[in-house]
Amino acid sequence: MRVLIVKTSSMGDVIHTLPAVTDAAKHIPGIEFDWVVEENFAEIPRWHPRVKQIFPFAWRRWRKQIFSAATRTEWKVFRQSLRAQQYDLIIDAQGLIKSAFCARFAKGLHVGPNWKSAREPLAALFYQRSYAMDWTTHAITRMRSLFSQALDYPLPDTIPDYGIDRRTLLSGEMQEEPYLVFLHGTTWATKHWPEESWVELTQLANQHGLKVKLPWGNPAERERAQRIAARTNLAEVLPRQDLQGMAKILAGAQAIAAVDTGLGHLAAALDVPCVSLYGPTDPLLTGALGKSQVHLTAKFPCAPCFSKLCTYEGSVSPLYPSCFMGVTAGAVWGSLITLL
Image (tube, rainbow, N blue to C red; front, side, top):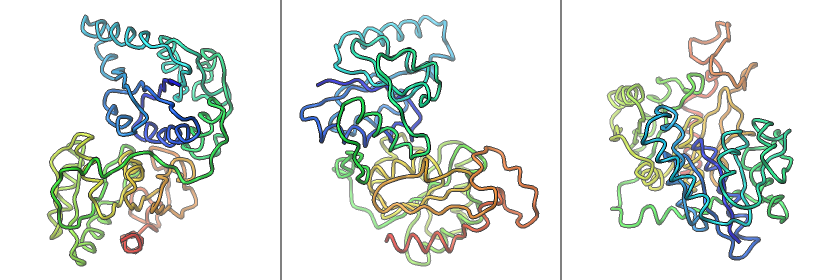
């Protein structure tokens, strides 16, 4: 059986779909998947042994030069590639008009979330069959539910299995002294744990003889990493990494501390012990799931607010966002110690 998955982005959403692929592989012998995914995240599906062909979808780049000759040529090649294969099933796991439209170029039975479950309800008009998903459950559970209904097997209630063997990422790598990775960068300003807390946590790790690696993805994150490293003894600001390089670094770590970010979900997929910090978001809906995953949530009247801007007007704490005042470096270190 050959199935096409359309799940283009974001990093966390792509990772959240992997356990559904593993479920299907356990219930349907011989099933194989192809995958349409944003080109920046194309490495992720390749790590799953049941994913055979990747169709990189460059919408983020194409829309910047939508009328250029190069874009028209790439779009034509993309459509032709999709049409070349006959699929038993085409699952739009994104639930957007964009993804549903893209999926229509492929030949086969088109399915996806129903109009109450799709992120954009009109996307359901593109499907020949549609299924309900419970938005009060975790994103991984929703994906597992969609696949189980579309492929007709019982919905598993096991710990998610992402299907990635991290040993393959570390094959040929030289052994290093034990290290931790602190994922301090994220998109929303309200998801950021205070810089001073990162300094304190790094100092605690150093006191126990553990080196800390600090990745970054943009100039602001690099500068923050440099400030943290300057105030600690055993901290390394990493060179900028591509996704494959970052996966290798995470796979080799003893443990990880992370804010709510896509790389935190990658840590869970690689089965690396991780303490994740949640302020404005809810780990029950989008937390990093897997073995040895600890969630520390803000205990605050307005958390989780799901807002990119903190509007709290109290004066109980000078921190921004204020909800992180209860998530101390000591509490995070205590959780890391239990994982180590």
